[in-house]
Length: 185
Image (cartoon, rainbow, N blue to C red; front, side, top):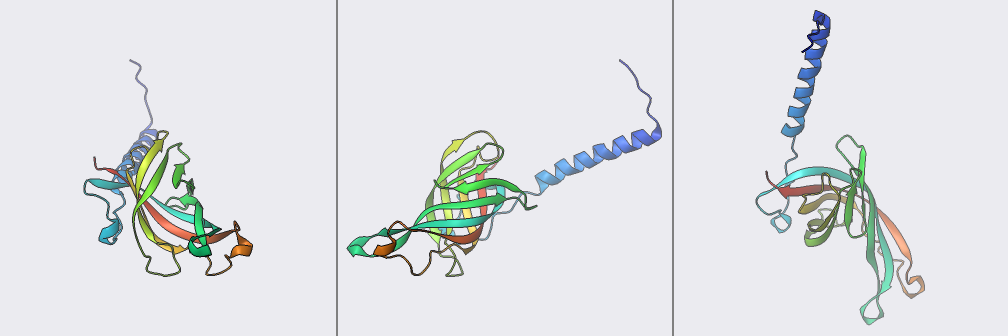
């Protein structure tokens, strides 16, 4: 075993970095996100905990489609949004599926299980999404449910969809918070 002699200044600096690292690890586990306050209809089942929070900003893409009795309406085609962490760093993408893919390589696809109207009528509904498939390893690999809350915007236009605009697309800007849940450990 080789013994090295360090000067008091080096030991002090090393000790400081060891303490700082321990503090950072303790802080990251102590700062788990609490679930948002939501109506019962979109509550996550007991035994689930928040494992990731993201803020999305982007667009809801709609296509003009014919419906019952020849009436045309805007139909959601797909979301297209960046996912940001609490420091506003882009960590992933939300797109058709609907799917959420992080830069760590993990991805989930979900299916809406429940919704409630947003407080603002010009905003898309709040959702509870059940995860139906996983890809890759990373933060999303154990996620079972997702909540979309605090939505702003994203509704389709009130007009502009008729027979002369069949298959036309439009984008509506939106933001939302997404909470990702996994079984509690």
